[in-house]
Length: 358
Length: 262
Image (tube, rainbow over all chains, first blue to last red; front, side, top):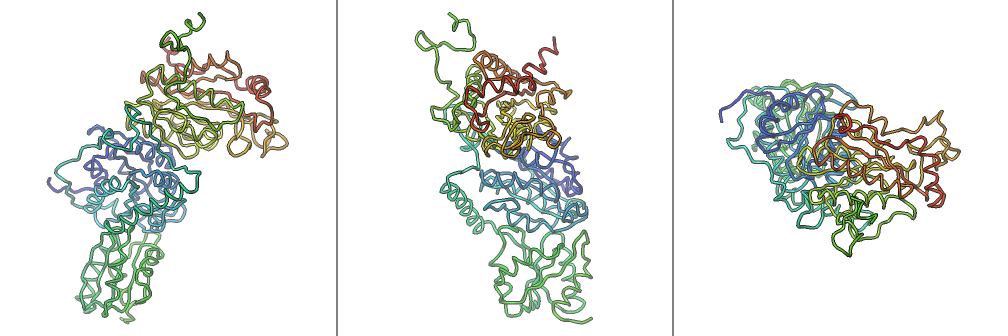
């Protein structure tokens, strides 16, 4: 298929259709409303359906009911809306349901702002709702990667029967880039081929999809079953990208999403202009987190420090510290509230971390 | 002879005149003596059987006394967060319009925490059926005041009786939902005497028939008893429904697409 120039939000909508996900539920919220505005006419063209719900609380629960059918279902929203969906995300995790949720993040807490931020890292990677659970978290750094990871999100959700969340900051949703979609669109899941979906108790025993276990032994069993799944996911699904990693690196930077692309520019510039070598490790999966790769890179003798740069007040840095296990100093730099640091800002972060005056 | 004239009771052969509906499992329920959930379950199950819907029916369980309804019905079920059953049913039905989807909710679930979900599901005209069991109290959590609790009614959170100056008046859901412009079937019935139960069964069956015919959203409010949390005997509880609830929660069909069509 030829390349197209497309806004991130619309490209994500088209990517879901490519993945065979034709049932979409959403509530308008800036900066991702273009997804619903695109899919409200695009889905009927391909035999799909969109419901504009009365609230994000309802969206989460519509997803819950729709996922019980065994078909591919999804929603898109932004930070305050994702907070309202946490109830359903917890229930769907407990009930082992595959769904895809896309969070085009804006600044918080509270109503916050509508500009790009990465301040939902804790909420996305640590559970977000109540109970012993995680969701898989994917973080694209370009519109093309948002398309590819959206399609992957449906595959992972089905494979592990778990909610999968894609988090991109508002920049990913709002900017236009050239994108390519897969040639072949996938068929919708056949719900009758599933051995767990609710498709009518015909010639079989009736099925129940639930998260209620009043017997503590059963709840313990269900929670450890989820934990076992997360262990397998941690072994098999970690994705990350290395940039400019070499024995000359003095600094190892960790960053994801839009922020990581600005850092690539800063790495090129500071290398050329000042001869300072900086390497970047970009997690693509935020949960599971690339723990061992970060440790392996951080302990290399040439690395003086590890620096986590984020569009938040410092959230992922806690995981980076955990991975580095005290072997090297770990610091944080970044801005939040909708401010996107420039390459010049980032070069300043590098110098500060290395104690270089300019 | 009386039985043969009643179209609601199936007579399969010369000897069987009454049996457990196929849509119900053979199991013991956890309901208290005198509670009418059992009767209402049976009316729903009979309706599914008679309309031949069991094999494509999916129920949505609430949070409340009837949360374990999924253990009692012989059809597929999902269990919703508190109050959200109409949103789950919306999601499922939009994804599988060929299936039959119903929710079974109490008054705390539907009229309090789930008020938003039920109003919007009804207003969108979702082709689902809602069985709304109103016993004027929170049962499972131990008898607290509900939005449907009667003025002056004593509960564990209104020990001096519901004070309407602070808690407002009981919400009449059937009337509220019937005020929406979107065509729907909205009715209220009761379970206090066999005569009421026979009438309720016809209304519940019609609600499912309308979904089967892909006509409209349907909701049946069923006035019910809670002898345990009302602190009275089962017999007194049925009288309490007649004396206290029925004058306020008037029985009848509030909205009917077939009547509107003439």
